[in-house]
Length: 304
Picture 1 (tube, rainbow, N blue to C red):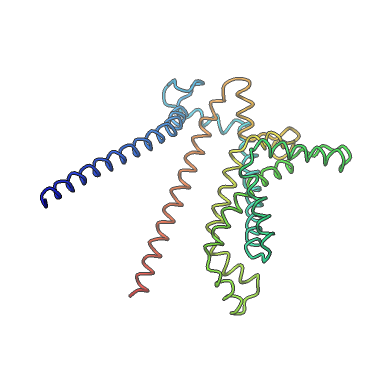
Picture 2: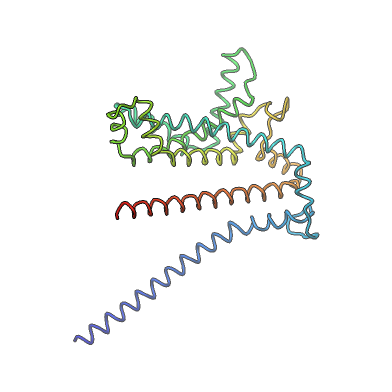
């Protein structure tokens, strides 16, 4: 009986091992298929940026011509400048407002206020972007017709408001979990030690929620850079475009697709953007690993 039980246990263990190997193999296969489908087009685009052809997929010899054309294409550079200015300005404002809102709601003593703000903040996140864009258009047209006596309000400012509304909820949702994870005694201890409320906020609370603020800021920039619908509905004249309608990278590509193929110089620009983002991710990863090692070493010294 003992031998039979051992044989049965051994057979079950082998069966479980085979199932685990099968599950891991299937999981890894799905991951690799997903990565291939996601990154192969990007790699094709990068390779195509080093040849001077109008059609992606054809090779006419290695060349830096598209990168030279990029820095002489005023239309693309104007759209790039507009995109960066809007993304940075809207991200800064969204981060400030979202952080202040999250802190205010977190320390609010009224439960109904917290619930109301949290529910209202989540609406733009789950709502369709086209609904947000159309709502903003209706609001600006109404204000221009009835409040400002027929003025055309569409400009850089309406576009900026649209991007802030798009990014603000995501900043709030990034900062809020950090406030929940924070030890509430830190703020109270700072007050007990003689800090004013502002000093306690800056010296005790802000360092604890800084990762959430940074994540919200980066996410705001990403959303702004990637946005097309809100930009297309709320833009007007201004910024580097002067008296013309503001063009961002997304609206420029859409306008070019209507008339024909995308300018070959855009392949060089997308390659530079991809390399820049990759470098940022690598630097952040290295920084976090160094900080984690330093914290681990510090704990080890304190333990001794």
